[in-house]
Amino acid sequence: MERNKKIFLAIVALTLISLWIDLPAHLTIPFPNNKKITIGHPIIDLHLGKKRFYRDLNFKYGLDLKGGVHIVLEADTSHLSEKDRKDALLSAKDIIEKRVNLYGISEAVVQTAESNGHWRIIVDLPGVVDVDKALALIGKTAQLDFREEDPKLLKQATQSGAFVFPTKKTGLTGQDLERASLSFNPQTGEPQVALKFNHQGTKKFAEITKRNVGKIVGIFLDNKPLTLPRVNEPILNGQAVISGNFTLSAAKDLVIQLNAGALPLPLKVVEQEKIGPTLGLISVYRSTIAGGVGLLAVILFMFLYYGFPGLLADISLILYGIYTLAIYKLLPVTMSLPGVAGFMLSVGMAVDSNILIFERMKEELRAGQPWRQAMELGFGRAWDSIKDANVATLITAFILFNPFNWSFLNRSGMVRGFALTLALGIIISLFTGIVVTRNLMRLFWHKPKEKEVLDESNN
Image 1 (cartoon, rainbow, N blue to C red):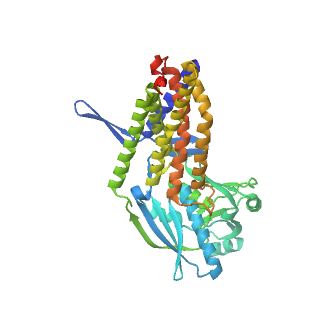
Image 2: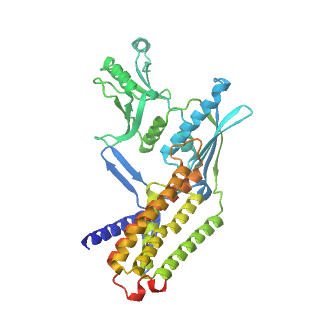
Image 3: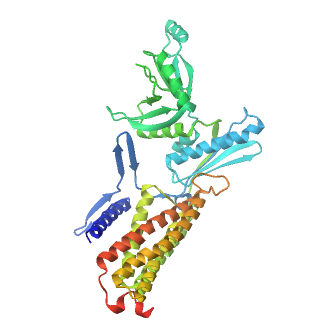
């Protein structure tokens, strides 16, 4: 009993945290005498050493529900042979997709098109309102390289009185990077970009710093100097930091561009526009009403057919909805109409496990088991069927989501959204249907009257 109470307290704590995450952007609570209290939208901003976890806890909506940005980029393939153009365009498309995904835009649509000698990439970004920022993110070349002082040019510049810092390339570029990450200066707290080179890059960087102790080694992005640090000692571990008075947003964007890689060919914008939701408000409203009616029907069925145990299952179903919405905000999950459909489908499936358990309990009661033992056996013996059914559905969701981006499987953003919401719904429903319902029944379902034990005498 003591263990059950601890589990119950943990469920209550989890529910309160989830409710806090689920709060709307601006919740106004009215009080008497025309007084109101407005609760601002919660955010999560945690600093764990050099790592930062930030979530604004807003729902992310797809193109069909909120609209976004439509951009058409044309590639300059004049310097490539005919046979190399398609591969270069596909490479550019993959890099843009990486940047979009790293930026946190889910269910974006990135596709290529070729017509009359024009090689283009079409990008649809849901929920994005700043067109200029989107263009800067996906269209920037992001060629990173390190340069050292050129003594000959430095002497000429000094003699001529020029204030230009003359450099020459070292051969160390962004292709030698293993990864870039956002970090913060421990003294000033300012954002900076930490670089870790691969094996070959580590060797190159060590040689560069060895021969330039006391000299400047410049870090350039797209031929523009980001920072010109002076080398105090050789750096042998293959790690460097770019600290160029970045804003947090600029540092994040640079990390995204460096991790995704440089674009293999120049791109220019030929079309850009904001697009509205592809579904009208009436369609969204009707879908929401349909989902609400379905949820209410499931709740009524469980209560009317199974009585008090059904009521406890309904409480678990409500908690399932609270937890699911919190997970959607934390990940975050982009909500499009297929995603909403996945959520609604998982609501119906959320009570499947309880139905299997309750029916198994009836069989145990008919076999003469005491009601408490019948309850425990119902949960234990129904688990195999519940597990097999849900694992089969999870495998289907895995194939639809295609996490490894296999070309022979689906790669559509909206289908992936449906698969993700369905998979999350199944996992959360197993927790609420098994752990939560079982704990509630152990604590609150006391020995019933003979004719109230799941109506076993009538079934």
